Image (cartoon, rainbow, N blue to C red; front, side, top):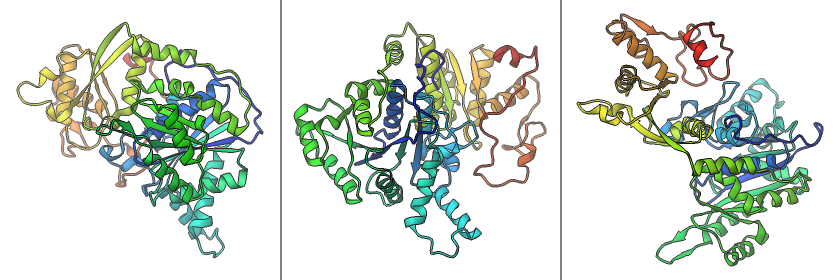
Length: 467
C-alpha cells in the first residue's frame, strides 16, 4: 500500500449481499506486457469511482507457489499478511488499491491440481473419472467464488499468453463463468501488443488480430483491447483493429509506455477505460476522484531533491527480484518529495582493492534477503562500511543476519562468528535455525512469514526507532 496521504480514500458503495461483477484480464502475443499493472490500474480506477474491488491472479505453472522458484526466472515473491508466498503482481494490486490480499488471491496450476488430487484420494468424487472438464474447471471457478464477497467488482488476471497449453484450463473456466453468470456480469479485457516496425515506419496490428483470433477459437470474445505500444494509436488504426477484432472502436485503448508505473491509471483514465467497463457491467458509480493520484505523479516528476540508495544484493541482475523494495523506496521518496536514485550493487562485486568506490556516493545502504552462501562476504563488507562510516543502513532478513555476523566479528571480537546455515561448525553461532524448523529439510512453505505481533521493550533502541 502507498504511504499514508499518497492515495485517495475509497467511497463506500453497494450492499454486502450483492453479487459482484467480474473483470477478466488476459494477455496475448508475448509475455511481460504488464497484465499485472493493467489489472492493478483497473482496480485503482474503479476504486476512484467509489467501488470496492478485490483482485486475484492465476499462474499456469506447476509449482505449488513461487516460493522455491529462482528470482532470476520469476522475480520476487510477494508475501501476504497471512504468510503466503505469491506472485509479484499481488504487490502491484496492494500498492494500487486498498485490497488486502491472502493466499486465496493467488493460485497456480500446481496448487489447483494438489487440491483436486487430495479430494480424489479422500474419495470426494465418489469413484468418478476425474477430468479437466468439469473437475479442474470447477476447482478454478470455486477459487474465484471464494474471494467474491463484500466487494462490487472482482478483477481476475490470468498469467501466461493466450495460446499456451498451460493456461487453457483457466481460460476455459473464465469462458464458463461468463456463460453461467450472463454477459452483463463479466467483461473480458485483453492486453495485446501493437509493435512499431522501424524499417516500415508504422505500427502493425496483425499480432493483435492473431491474438484475438486465438481467444475466439476457445470461445472468448474480448470486450476491450489494451494495446501496448510505444506511441499513441491513431483513430484510424483503432478503427482497423476494432473492425478485425469485432470490438467497438472506443474499446480499443492505447496502453502507451510511461516514465512511471503510477502514471498508468491516469493514462487509461484519459482513454476512458473505466467508463467502458462500467457501461459493459451496467454499474452505477460515483464521479472519478483521481486528484491525489495526479498529485502523486506530479511529485514523482518534479521532486525537490534526490537521495542515492545502494541496494547490495545477490540477484541485482534482474531488478524484479526486489520489486517491492524498489517501490517502497520510491514511496518513501514521494512522501518527502524526493527522487530516489537506486544503485544496484552486486554483492559478489564488493571485493578486491577498490570495492569501496561502488559505495562512496551512497546516502544509504540496503541489504535485502536471499538464500545460500553466495555473496555473503560482499554483504558483510558493505555492512561494515556503513557501520564504520556512519552511512544509514537497513538490513532485511538475510541482510539483518549479515549485520549481526559483521558486528559479532568486527565489534565484539568473536572471530569466525557465523550463521549455522553457512557454517555448522562455527565456534560462535550468532544466527541459529528456528527451533520449529530443526529437522525440516523441505524448502517450500517452511519459513515463518507474514504479519506477526512484535512487542518492543520500552527504552530499547528498537522501541526508539519504531515507537
